[in-house]
Image (cartoon, rainbow, N blue to C red; front, side):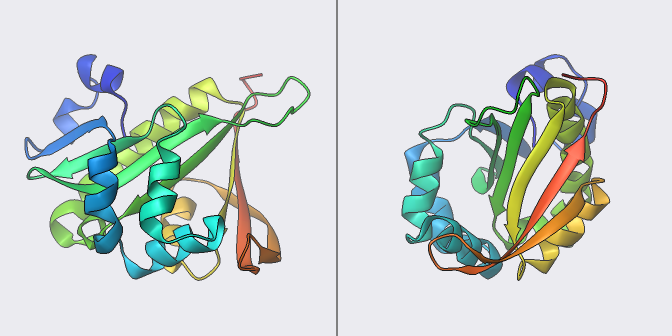
Length: 178
């Protein structure tokens, strides 16, 4: 979960094996990823957008900054942290999201993914006072991942999104950024 400037600065290169490349996402990546998403990730994408995962992923490209993680030349994860479009009375709010294939939970990739996630979240938190979004309450892998990254769950929405499914609201606060 890195931005190119993080790789260029050399801060993260040691944390990633040579077989992992982070790069801007493309429409071709969306087509490749959609049928291979973890079932919980595909279900979450559909629950949030009300459309099949391929369309939800392409919609994600409309916002700047969507990245993919290639593992051995194959996109296995798409992610971003976008500025919230809502007015938060001068507080900077980022909206992080991520969808991936089963490779991100495989023994080969899991530790690298967690290490890279921590670095990316710290970078995002340096830019935003608050990181905020919602996660499908059924996505237990991502809930554990968010907890490991020091996100806090602050509310449960029993009917969220166009499918009206239960979601959890999560946040991570940096009091030093405004």
